[in-house]
Amino acid sequence: MQPRTQKMSTHPEDARLASCSPRDVTLYTRPGCRLCDEAKSVIAPLLGEFGAALREVNVDADPVLKDRYGCDVPVIFIGRKKAAKHRVDLQQFRKQLQDAGAS
Image 1 (cartoon, helix red, strand yellow):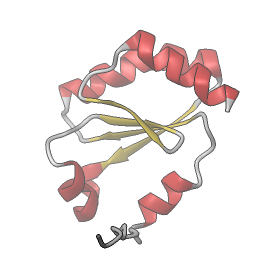
Image 2 (cartoon, helix red, strand yellow):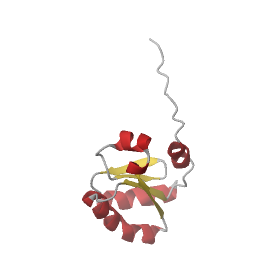
Image 3 (cartoon, one colour):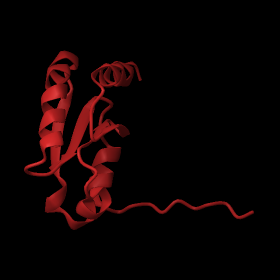
């Protein structure tokens, strides 16, 4: 059996995400996305509570990200880990932020 080799991405956003601190929150979004606006408003109080920094990335501004995420926005990462897609479970998001700070 041949070992699988993982293709490394050379996209600048992948490098930025890989260098995020544990409580850096990245929201992949697009203009006019109702679910994206809802996700941002849901997580906003927790960002302040945990001292987390939010970075919004418009996937439509980059063809690679547009292809990668398509209609699957919002997508939220905490540090390097995907935390949510489409909708945010507030209790789970809180736990993920707590766990990120303990790492």
